[in-house]
Image (cartoon, rainbow over all chains, first blue to last red; front, top):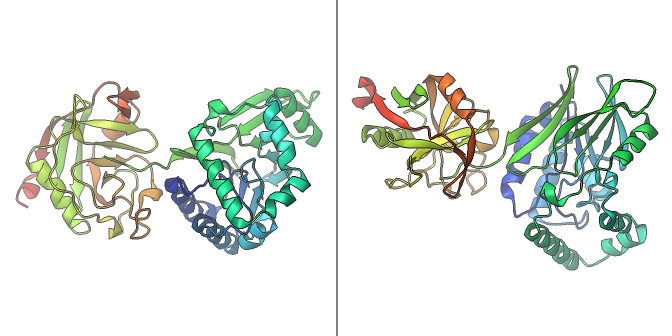
Length: 249
Length: 169
């Protein structure tokens, strides 16, 4: 039974096909997995764990069904759903992981991250990130009235769609030094992350210096016309994609 | 059995008249009218499906008969080698266009009688020449006449051959 890793679904009411593909993924793939890791940006926007929207409830119910069936579920916050919190974890049975987490399965050890903190060349974004992670800012945001937060989220989604800000071209890629630094810090040969919407497997010269071996950076893909999942089993890692589009005349 | 001769080789299909009676009869009628001859596979996505049955080689759309009811709730699944009907966003809007699944596309199956969950009606399967479909799915595609994923070299159905058994239906 493989371990599955996904990220960057950017679920939103405006893209029902992606939500549907995710629900099918949970029912057909994840239920047969030995664990599911969601490495950030499951949602395009998350206004707080008290979100009463249909999408929020449907997805939480489906995740709860998965974890109740015995599949451990691990979730990281992304830069879009950075307000995912304890309430969500309680509702879904998920364990919330920190921004940098070590996983160990089938003899493989890897660091998993959303990946936004690696894009250190994007000064403006890093400024926003510091704000979004600031407890005072988060407390203020969480205590705005629900209506106000709903409006914020819908404005945010509209702006993001209009600016095509989920296209890879609009997102800065990771900084190599930042990658090397974090892999060295955790003494790992494999880093798995999302965020950049550039799904790929990069062989890199070992960042751990004197080992002489190769390290790898595996980048998960965003879900749009295709969905992406990384599986890990006794044969190693496999990055796969599958269609989530309809078949229209 | 219906055999389509195409510019990339022949493939044959069987229709499921028991589980998808309306869709199979609709498809057979188009085949008997020789509607599909001269149409192309205008949307090809490797890892997903190959779609045809409604566009001429110049990418003009052929006129169709009325739309049919969606029979996606018949228990047949969108698995590799199956045929299903393409449609618009409205569930009951299939006419002539069909597709062959080249992956197990579970997300296309019926899950509920609503806009999101209706799914795509499977009504038959490829019984011979799956290698031709496998070949088609790998061709080079690009943008053409406002459509994406269009094969760069058109893949046309040049002849439709209907078995005696099907001709008698």
